[in-house]
Length: 156
Image (cartoon, rainbow, N blue to C red; front, side, top):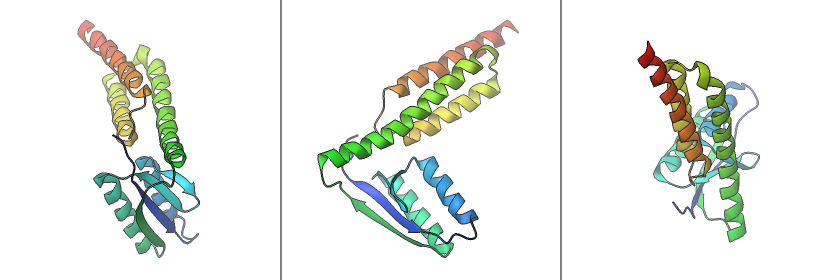
């Protein structure tokens, strides 16, 4: 998908209590948001990301903070490319970590481990707005673990 519009969340939360700041940070991380500067994050704009940022803005306000959501386009192709690269790099790193996990888990993988690997894969896919090549490699690695688990279960 060729994203040209981005959704931005500008927010500020009080230092204390720290629980709301941590909760917002975790949710932003789960969404795969890119931090532009302190208190300003971005994601490619689609209905899901816009809604997620709107909800987070409400959460920040309920925690006695300030928050605004915006839709914007980068000012140049270079800025657009830089944002895309930052989002893709983060997702690529996650796929590579998952591939490493599959290599470690392959020999002793159980159905439970396979379920965890599949959940992690799907969570990363949800943040993969630009379809980095490592997605297919990670999918194949998880499916290799699945094949080993199935082979092991058939022997039993």
